[in-house]
Length: 193
Ligand code: ADP
Image (cartoon, rainbow, N blue to C red; front, side, top):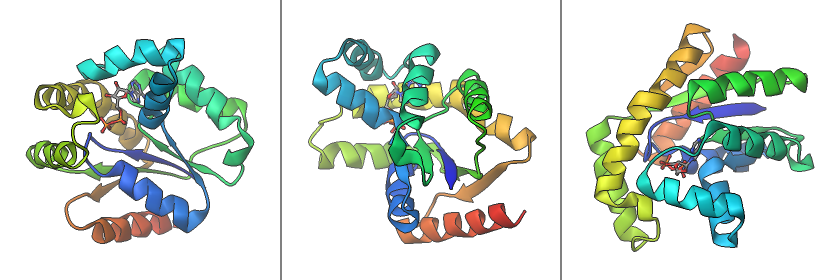
């Protein structure tokens, strides 16, 4: 099974991805985690990405597309994967289409987790308190920037898939289990269609 989880920062993509990983035996490909790992390892790409991430901006499309192409080609994706944090621009979505085509693959389902932006600010502030500020981009001013970047550059990705009739929008308000149940439901509907 191959899935995309779309949704703004703080929507719960990472949490829901982990649930799906456990349930379906597939791997989670979180571009945010990959970039943070590269930054910690001090690779040239990671170091460049770190300052962009800390500002709340997006890492350039060509860098992200290369990272995802390499990652999809690893053997552990054979059972399937969940993309979490990619695609984040319409150009990334188009590049992904091309990448999958080249490999004779397609996505089974694209799920958008819909959450009110005011709630997101509160959730991320809570996460920042819990993690003791370990993510520089969870600082309040940067969160506002990330939400703005989401509206401008990533919301059109949901629209891109909606227009092609392949998007399942899921209400992201409620407990982890409630949202998880809605995602499960939309996956069943997705495979029936
Ligand atoms: P969140 O969704 O909570 O904002 P992520 O961990 O997914 O957090 O991403 C953190 C940062 O990593 C983003 O703000 C951005 O700078 C960078 N990033 C992650 N994925 C992408 C992507 N597909 N394209 C560009 N930048 C990305």
